[in-house]
Image (cartoon, rainbow, N blue to C red; front, side):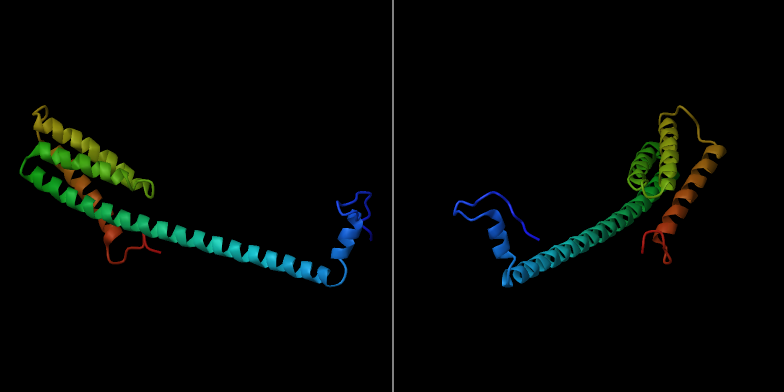
Length: 171
């Protein structure tokens, strides 16, 4: 098969003659080897890129898990503070801690929406405690029961995440 063209190169050779000179003898084999090496190099680069991508995703997942552990530890501390303040009847400080706790839990609600549900409940209790601090409402057994139920729910969720047999965040 000929690559005949009517064009001539600046040196006066026709295009077909130039191509045929490259495709004769050892040049064809050399070009085939160079092409094969280029394909192998491209495949190796693609493998390296995929490997780097997998490593980055793994690192990001580990960072997210560590951040979630940090948030949960902080949440436990804030809940303990809020509980202590509520026992002392320091409603304004308890409300502040519940607001902080609710805001903190919203940061990890994207992984598990039950954290978001707890955050909403905490913000409602924050509002109630603020009203108690302003003496707009009085503490009732019903309110105490809601507060205890909320504490239990948050502590249970925290325990699920940090317990010795935790399978929620580890892979």
